[in-house]
Amino acid sequence: MNDSDSTVKLSQRLRRHVIDMAQTGGGSHVGSALSIADIIAVLYGDFLRFDISNPDWEERDRFLLSKGHAGSCVYAALAEIGFFSLNTLKTHYQDGSILSGHVSHKDVPGVEFSTGSLGHALSVSVGMAMSAKLKEEDHRVVCLLSDGECDEGSNWEAIMFAAHHKLSNLTAIVDYNKLQSLASTEETLGLEPFADKWRSFGWEVFEVDGHSHEELAAGFAASTASMPKCVIAHTTKGKGVSFMENQVLWHYRSPQGQEYLDAISELDLES
Image (cartoon, rainbow, N blue to C red):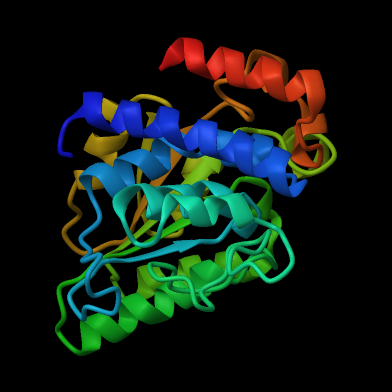
Protein backbone atom coordinates (compact mmCIF):
# COMPACT_ATOMS: atom_id res chain seq x y z
CA MET A 1 0.00 0.00 0.00
CA ASN A 2 2.74 2.40 1.04
CA ASP A 3 0.74 5.60 1.46
CA SER A 4 -1.38 7.01 4.25
CA ASP A 5 -4.54 7.27 2.10
CA SER A 6 -4.44 3.52 1.52
CA THR A 7 -3.81 2.69 5.16
CA VAL A 8 -6.62 5.02 6.25
CA LYS A 9 -9.01 3.17 3.95
CA LEU A 10 -7.73 -0.12 5.36
CA SER A 11 -8.34 1.06 8.93
CA GLN A 12 -11.91 1.98 8.02
CA ARG A 13 -12.50 -1.50 6.63
CA LEU A 14 -10.97 -3.04 9.76
CA ARG A 15 -13.36 -1.11 11.99
CA ARG A 16 -16.34 -2.26 9.91
CA HIS A 17 -15.17 -5.88 10.16
CA VAL A 18 -14.70 -5.57 13.95
CA ILE A 19 -18.30 -4.41 14.38
CA ASP A 20 -19.67 -7.06 12.02
CA MET A 21 -17.70 -9.85 13.71
CA ALA A 22 -18.84 -8.85 17.20
CA GLN A 23 -22.47 -8.62 16.10
CA THR A 24 -22.45 -11.95 14.27
CA GLY A 25 -20.51 -14.00 16.80
CA GLY A 26 -21.57 -12.21 19.97
CA GLY A 27 -17.97 -11.49 20.92
CA SER A 28 -16.80 -8.51 22.92
CA HIS A 29 -13.72 -6.28 23.27
CA VAL A 30 -15.00 -4.02 20.51
CA GLY A 31 -13.54 -0.88 22.09
CA SER A 32 -10.11 -2.47 22.37
CA ALA A 33 -10.14 -3.60 18.74
CA LEU A 34 -11.32 -0.23 17.43
CA SER A 35 -8.58 1.62 19.29
CA ILE A 36 -5.83 -0.30 17.45
CA ALA A 37 -7.33 -0.24 13.94
CA ASP A 38 -5.05 2.56 12.77
CA ILE A 39 -1.98 0.93 14.32
CA ILE A 40 -2.77 -2.41 12.67
CA ALA A 41 -3.52 -0.76 9.31
CA VAL A 42 -0.17 1.04 9.24
CA LEU A 43 1.72 -2.06 10.38
CA TYR A 44 0.22 -4.36 7.76
CA GLY A 45 -0.24 -1.75 5.05
CA ASP A 46 3.08 0.03 5.24
CA PHE A 47 5.63 -1.54 7.61
CA LEU A 48 5.70 -5.28 8.25
CA ARG A 49 7.51 -7.57 5.85
CA PHE A 50 5.58 -10.76 5.04
CA ASP A 51 4.63 -13.14 2.23
CA ILE A 52 0.99 -14.24 2.09
CA SER A 53 1.95 -17.19 -0.14
CA ASN A 54 4.49 -18.36 2.44
CA PRO A 55 3.39 -17.45 5.99
CA ASP A 56 6.45 -19.19 7.49
CA TRP A 57 8.94 -17.31 5.30
CA GLU A 58 12.12 -17.10 7.39
CA GLU A 59 12.77 -13.44 6.55
CA ARG A 60 9.32 -12.22 7.58
CA ASP A 61 8.92 -9.72 10.39
CA ARG A 62 7.32 -11.19 13.50
CA PHE A 63 4.27 -9.40 14.91
CA LEU A 64 2.71 -10.42 18.23
CA LEU A 65 -0.52 -8.97 19.59
CA SER A 66 -0.01 -9.06 23.33
CA LYS A 67 -3.49 -7.63 23.98
CA GLY A 68 -4.97 -10.78 22.49
CA HIS A 69 -8.55 -9.82 23.36
CA ALA A 70 -8.41 -7.35 20.44
CA GLY A 71 -7.69 -10.18 18.03
CA SER A 72 -10.66 -9.47 15.78
CA CYS A 73 -8.82 -6.47 14.36
CA VAL A 74 -5.76 -8.55 13.49
CA TYR A 75 -7.90 -11.29 11.96
CA ALA A 76 -9.59 -8.63 9.84
CA ALA A 77 -6.22 -7.31 8.64
CA LEU A 78 -4.97 -10.79 7.77
CA ALA A 79 -8.11 -11.45 5.75
CA GLU A 80 -7.94 -8.06 4.03
CA ILE A 81 -4.38 -8.65 2.81
CA GLY A 82 -5.09 -12.19 1.68
CA PHE A 83 -3.85 -14.66 4.28
CA PHE A 84 -7.33 -16.21 4.27
CA SER A 85 -10.79 -15.48 2.90
CA LEU A 86 -12.85 -12.55 4.09
CA ASN A 87 -15.73 -14.99 4.42
CA THR A 88 -13.83 -16.68 7.26
CA LEU A 89 -14.41 -13.55 9.36
CA LYS A 90 -18.12 -14.42 9.46
CA THR A 91 -17.26 -17.46 11.63
CA HIS A 92 -15.46 -15.44 14.32
CA TYR A 93 -16.10 -16.63 17.89
CA GLN A 94 -18.38 -19.43 16.77
CA ASP A 95 -18.16 -23.17 17.44
CA GLY A 96 -15.68 -24.89 15.14
CA SER A 97 -14.14 -21.66 13.84
CA ILE A 98 -10.38 -21.18 13.61
CA LEU A 99 -10.95 -17.57 14.70
CA SER A 100 -11.22 -17.67 18.48
CA GLY A 101 -12.20 -14.70 20.61
CA HIS A 102 -8.60 -14.12 21.70
CA VAL A 103 -6.09 -14.29 18.90
CA SER A 104 -4.76 -17.80 18.20
CA HIS A 105 -2.06 -19.10 15.89
CA LYS A 106 -3.63 -22.56 15.59
CA ASP A 107 -4.53 -23.07 11.92
CA VAL A 108 -4.49 -19.29 11.33
CA PRO A 109 -1.82 -18.25 8.79
CA GLY A 110 -0.10 -15.00 9.69
CA VAL A 111 -0.47 -15.29 13.48
CA GLU A 112 2.79 -15.97 15.29
CA PHE A 113 1.62 -16.64 18.84
CA SER A 114 -1.62 -17.23 20.73
CA THR A 115 -2.33 -14.58 23.33
CA GLY A 116 -5.00 -13.73 25.86
CA SER A 117 -3.28 -14.02 29.21
CA LEU A 118 -1.78 -10.55 29.49
CA GLY A 119 1.91 -10.00 30.09
CA HIS A 120 3.20 -12.91 27.99
CA ALA A 121 3.82 -11.74 24.44
CA LEU A 122 6.49 -9.15 25.17
CA SER A 123 8.65 -11.79 26.85
CA VAL A 124 8.18 -14.07 23.84
CA SER A 125 8.99 -11.17 21.53
CA VAL A 126 12.20 -10.51 23.45
CA GLY A 127 13.14 -14.15 22.98
CA MET A 128 12.46 -13.94 19.25
CA ALA A 129 14.52 -10.75 18.94
CA MET A 130 17.38 -12.26 20.93
CA SER A 131 17.33 -15.37 18.73
CA ALA A 132 17.46 -13.24 15.59
CA LYS A 133 20.44 -11.30 16.95
CA LEU A 134 22.33 -14.48 17.81
CA LYS A 135 21.64 -15.93 14.35
CA GLU A 136 22.50 -12.60 12.67
CA GLU A 137 19.09 -12.48 11.01
CA ASP A 138 17.68 -9.10 10.01
CA HIS A 139 13.94 -9.51 10.51
CA ARG A 140 12.19 -7.27 13.01
CA VAL A 141 10.02 -8.21 15.97
CA VAL A 142 7.03 -6.01 16.85
CA CYS A 143 4.82 -6.45 19.91
CA LEU A 144 1.60 -4.49 20.53
CA LEU A 145 0.63 -4.19 24.20
CA SER A 146 -2.29 -2.64 26.02
CA ASP A 147 -1.66 0.09 28.57
CA GLY A 148 -3.41 -1.82 31.39
CA GLU A 149 -1.22 -4.79 30.57
CA CYS A 150 1.78 -2.75 31.66
CA ASP A 151 0.64 -3.41 35.23
CA GLU A 152 2.16 -6.89 34.76
CA GLY A 153 5.60 -7.32 36.29
CA SER A 154 6.68 -9.82 33.63
CA ASN A 155 6.67 -7.00 31.09
CA TRP A 156 9.18 -4.97 33.08
CA GLU A 157 11.48 -7.97 33.38
CA ALA A 158 11.34 -8.30 29.60
CA ILE A 159 11.94 -4.57 29.18
CA MET A 160 15.09 -4.76 31.32
CA PHE A 161 16.36 -7.83 29.47
CA ALA A 162 15.81 -6.26 26.02
CA ALA A 163 17.74 -3.13 26.93
CA HIS A 164 20.57 -5.09 28.57
CA HIS A 165 21.05 -7.12 25.39
CA LYS A 166 20.63 -4.09 23.11
CA LEU A 167 17.81 -5.60 21.07
CA SER A 168 17.51 -2.83 18.49
CA ASN A 169 15.47 -5.21 16.29
CA LEU A 170 12.60 -5.08 18.79
CA THR A 171 9.73 -2.57 18.80
CA ALA A 172 7.10 -2.44 21.51
CA ILE A 173 3.94 -0.48 20.77
CA VAL A 174 1.62 0.51 23.59
CA ASP A 175 -2.02 1.17 22.80
CA TYR A 176 -2.38 3.94 25.37
CA ASN A 177 -6.16 4.42 25.34
CA LYS A 178 -6.16 4.99 29.11
CA LEU A 179 -9.03 2.62 29.86
CA GLN A 180 -8.76 -0.97 31.02
CA SER A 181 -11.33 -3.61 31.86
CA LEU A 182 -13.33 -1.84 34.59
CA ALA A 183 -11.96 1.69 34.95
CA SER A 184 -9.33 4.10 33.72
CA THR A 185 -5.67 3.17 33.96
CA GLU A 186 -5.15 6.11 36.30
CA GLU A 187 -7.80 4.82 38.72
CA THR A 188 -6.62 1.23 38.49
CA LEU A 189 -2.85 1.61 38.75
CA GLY A 190 -1.31 4.84 37.51
CA LEU A 191 1.32 4.47 34.77
CA GLU A 192 2.70 7.99 34.64
CA PRO A 193 5.38 9.11 34.08
CA PHE A 194 5.00 6.36 31.51
CA ALA A 195 7.46 7.37 28.78
CA ASP A 196 10.12 8.22 31.36
CA LYS A 197 9.83 4.73 32.83
CA TRP A 198 10.62 3.12 29.48
CA ARG A 199 13.52 5.52 28.96
CA SER A 200 14.91 4.80 32.41
CA PHE A 201 14.93 1.11 31.49
CA GLY A 202 17.14 1.87 28.47
CA TRP A 203 14.63 2.12 25.63
CA GLU A 204 14.23 4.84 23.03
CA VAL A 205 10.70 6.19 23.19
CA PHE A 206 8.50 7.87 20.61
CA GLU A 207 5.11 9.27 21.60
CA VAL A 208 2.63 9.56 18.73
CA ASP A 209 -1.02 10.17 17.99
CA GLY A 210 -2.19 6.58 17.59
CA HIS A 211 -4.80 7.62 15.03
CA SER A 212 -2.41 9.65 12.83
CA HIS A 213 -1.10 7.35 10.13
CA GLU A 214 1.74 9.72 9.35
CA GLU A 215 2.93 9.81 12.98
CA LEU A 216 2.56 6.05 13.36
CA ALA A 217 4.54 5.38 10.19
CA ALA A 218 7.31 7.73 11.30
CA GLY A 219 7.48 6.15 14.75
CA PHE A 220 7.63 2.62 13.38
CA ALA A 221 10.30 3.54 10.83
CA ALA A 222 12.56 5.44 13.24
CA SER A 223 15.80 3.55 13.73
CA THR A 224 17.77 3.13 16.94
CA ALA A 225 21.46 2.39 17.00
CA SER A 226 21.70 -0.14 19.81
CA MET A 227 18.53 -0.04 21.89
CA PRO A 228 14.99 -1.38 21.66
CA LYS A 229 12.23 1.04 20.72
CA CYS A 230 8.90 1.80 22.34
CA VAL A 231 6.18 3.63 20.43
CA ILE A 232 3.57 4.96 22.85
CA ALA A 233 0.46 5.45 20.74
CA HIS A 234 -2.08 7.75 22.38
CA THR A 235 -5.46 6.42 21.27
CA THR A 236 -9.18 6.57 22.01
CA LYS A 237 -10.88 3.36 23.08
CA GLY A 238 -13.78 2.66 20.71
CA LYS A 239 -12.38 5.07 18.10
CA GLY A 240 -14.64 5.59 15.10
CA VAL A 241 -18.03 5.02 16.75
CA SER A 242 -19.05 8.04 18.79
CA PHE A 243 -21.13 6.26 21.44
CA MET A 244 -18.38 3.71 22.02
CA GLU A 245 -15.53 6.17 22.42
CA ASN A 246 -14.00 6.40 25.91
CA GLN A 247 -16.63 4.07 27.32
CA VAL A 248 -15.61 1.16 29.56
CA LEU A 249 -18.91 -0.54 28.66
CA TRP A 250 -17.56 -1.53 25.25
CA HIS A 251 -14.76 -3.59 26.70
CA TYR A 252 -17.30 -6.40 27.16
CA ARG A 253 -20.47 -5.52 25.27
CA SER A 254 -21.27 -6.64 21.71
CA PRO A 255 -23.35 -4.37 19.47
CA GLN A 256 -26.77 -5.78 18.65
CA GLY A 257 -29.95 -4.37 17.18
CA GLN A 258 -30.04 -0.59 16.92
CA GLU A 259 -26.58 -0.22 18.45
CA TYR A 260 -25.15 -2.31 15.60
CA LEU A 261 -27.06 -0.34 12.97
CA ASP A 262 -25.96 2.99 14.48
CA ALA A 263 -22.32 1.89 14.61
CA ILE A 264 -22.34 0.72 10.99
CA SER A 265 -24.05 3.94 9.91
CA GLU A 266 -21.28 6.03 11.48
CA LEU A 267 -18.52 3.92 9.96
CA ASP A 268 -20.15 3.97 6.52
CA LEU A 269 -20.25 7.76 6.64
CA GLU A 270 -16.47 7.79 7.14
CA SER A 271 -15.78 5.37 4.27
